Image (cartoon, rainbow, N blue to C red; front, side, top):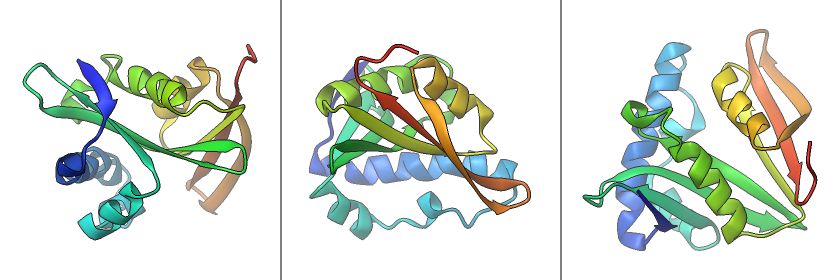
Length: 154
């Protein structure tokens, strides 16, 4: 597997993978209205102008994962860590997250996850992220916000 910066020509494949990865989650919770399923190629292209996109590709060049990040006011915000559903649990997400941290050095990193995705939260915690806030959009839904400080072992 190779992890590298995504090219402009990769954006449609990344968006297609995003739909596939988040569709699995949306179906599990009977909620097809989540933002990643609504994002258009035009929005991804616009985002590409100011956001770092990394991709993971297999030996054939097929994109199997992706992650995005943007730095604002001393914090790198990690967004849309995705892995092909058939390839989850093989370390691709871990490698992508570590790669985006290396690509975007910072003192502080922040990301969020749905409270309904405990495996995602466990991955982030295993890599040193700590919960600092939780918001609720309904009784059984909301977001957990996690942060990580460079050089701090937890």
